[in-house]
Amino acid sequence: MKKVLFFSLIAFCCFFRTQAQEVFHDSTALLILDKVGAYFGEVNSLKFNTKTSQDVGFRDDFFIKEFRSGEFIIQGPNQLSAKVIAQGKPQYYFYNGSQIVYYSLEDKIFVASEAPDNTLDMLESLYTDFGIQLVAADFLYPDFAFHMTETMDYIEYLGEAEVHGQKCFHIGAANAEMTFQIWVSQDLEARPAKIVVTYLGEPYAHQVEVTFENWEINETYPDSIFEFLPPPNSKQITWTKKD
Image (cartoon, rainbow, N blue to C red):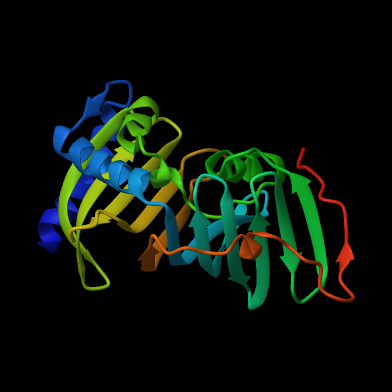
């Protein structure tokens, strides 16, 4: 099995390098991705944990690896709360459909900004405006498969694989700017076990890897957990958009 996956990955890379201008969308891969999108389009709430490994710019010609863990609760189309631990420091995010708030427990500072009226657009604006990639959320689109065909020139089912002992379907995708891999659980519920995104831009390729664990579906959470109440002695500062 490992040899099959190894040669599948070689084929994945070689196909993209030699035929980057052509479009290839494997029907098996699209069927699996469509099932993922349909599943998340039908649930009312999600709770899950993440472990993230990310290459971040240290100097103009040098990336370093950073690690963080996260706990996320998403309810309906426009509520999110998250706890992210990066370099041992807890950070919190609260989104209520109109405002996104970031709070640093260690520094006792918080910042708030107006936000789009749905979670997916909020996550995109958070990255676009402030450079914060809170969680890889492409799979949350009900039309996930369609979104992939619109943005990726190459999509192929690469075979079966295991992620932390869990049997998964492995799918690879690519366009001129990035490669995307997703491992989808073979359980009755089609949920991602891991995602790896490799950005091919300058100055060097860099990568984000996210593992998903401890899913809880369709619980009911009170609105209060998506609202931020400034703790005593906390200080509000200005959230500056990136250039």
